[in-house]
Image (cartoon, rainbow over all chains, first blue to last red; front, side, top):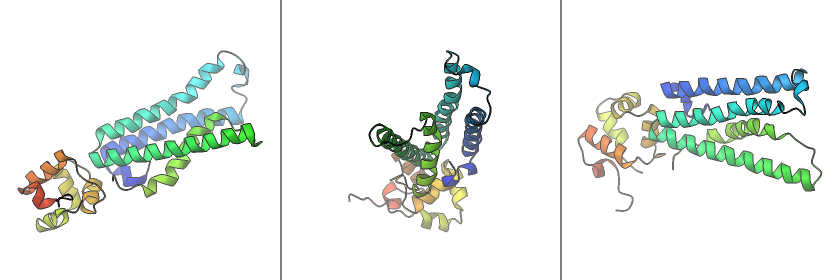
Length: 135
Length: 65
């Protein structure tokens, strides 16, 4: 998100604002879920799917924000952003696959699937500073 | 791709920001071109050539030639 100094262009500034907005929405729901009993009444109820959709919506929004950044940027920023997103997504999927099979076959403790979003950002944060070429 | 972009820019006393504005790209894109971290599209290569009033092959070294 911060590599390539995306905040230095108007498109980059919009991207950073949108990203923080979507991230804040996701974090707010997760923190409320973990620290309060706010959502206890929906457990096992059909309305629980509404909550699931609500926390997934910022993730969809993040994809839109990234595509908007690519659409509004020059070819170099577009290509580097795509590389960063692909590598971060791939790392997150690989880690989730690894852990999922670890749960099934190696006795690893269960982790909820919604952690994939922070896992993606962790992978992005680790990988993005090293992706500075479009080649 | 090796190129003379930095040299041509220096001859005109332009900053990377100014060249980027003239080309319609970011300063980061100009820096990436100058440091060979980005191979320009055909469209951008022709825009650069038009700006400096030189043929593309005078600015960018043909990697296949």
